[in-house]
Image (cartoon, rainbow, N blue to C red; front, side, top):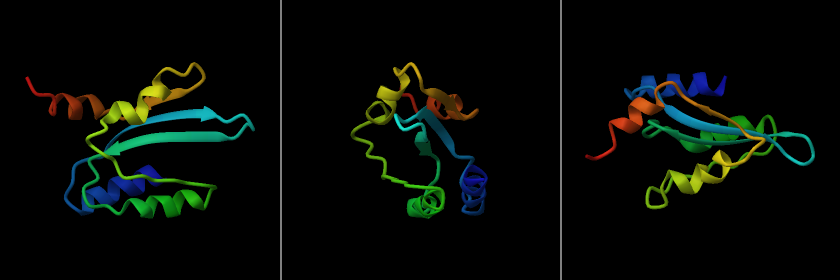
Length: 101
């Protein structure tokens, strides 16, 4: 539901379809825990989605800091054995268009 809302908000503002990475894992207490990095959202208010997630529990939504790079945000989740890693279908296309030769 939240991803559909994000895509709609992006389309209304004239942006393309958002692209994303998501890592899902179980915490020690047995609850699901998500880590995501989402791009292509332009001026969409990030705290809007914090408000949505807090309806279902705790949420923290941080602004991406480009000088840290994506590895800072997702690197440790890519190496976890128990994490379920998912990527949006358009992520590869978005990244290949941004890589400098």
